[in-house]
Image (cartoon, rainbow, N blue to C red; front, side, top):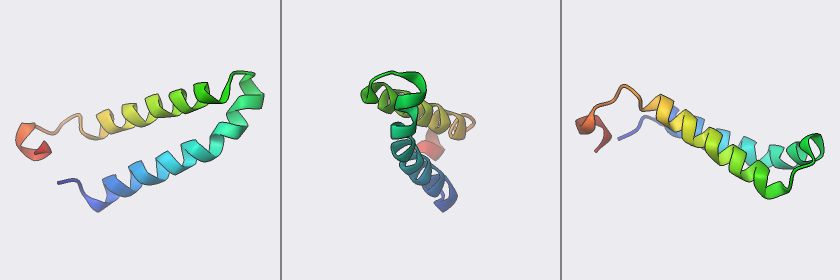
Length: 60
């Protein structure tokens, strides 16, 4: 089971990514879905870094 801190970090990071997509679009001149994909990749990376040192028993 994940801690409250980990859940809050991932939740608020996800919200922040959704909010910053309209800012990402004019800065990069890329389509909006590219901003969403970039944010999803960032969220995935943060999740992997948070759970990097956990073993199989702690994850289940």
